[in-house]
Picture (cartoon, rainbow, N blue to C red):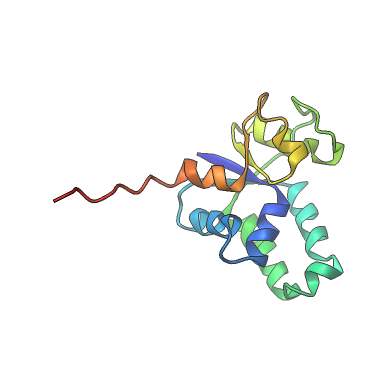
Amino acid sequence: MRAVLDPNVIISGLLSPDGAPARILIAWRRGLFELVVSAQLTPELQRALSYSKIRDRIDPGDSAILVVWLTRHASVCSDPVDAPSRSTDPGDDYLVALAASTRAILVSGDRHLLALADTCPIVSPVRFLDLIQPPVEAPPLP
């Protein structure tokens, strides 16, 4: 399974090590899905990581290492020209287009992107975890 993570999901994973976004990053490191990034996604991630409210909580050196690590270990794909659906935030259209062009699921917590779920594969972080993690079976009754 392939996935495009909204940069906000990646940042949330760094900020809250116990939340669903952090578990998604761990699942990727374990090889449970293929992460897709692009030339437009990584600069957006870098920009967001440089905001003062984020820099106060995530060391800038760790942020730089994360971006390099993503570009080395994720599948780096070209940014498509057109998005199949338009978000109410046009700045996020590239995420929709990237997911569609790579046949990936877009993972986001943004309501305006999740509102497009009926026209393209967009899921919340919690829902994505359900898709990539096998259900835990209860032990048989004695």
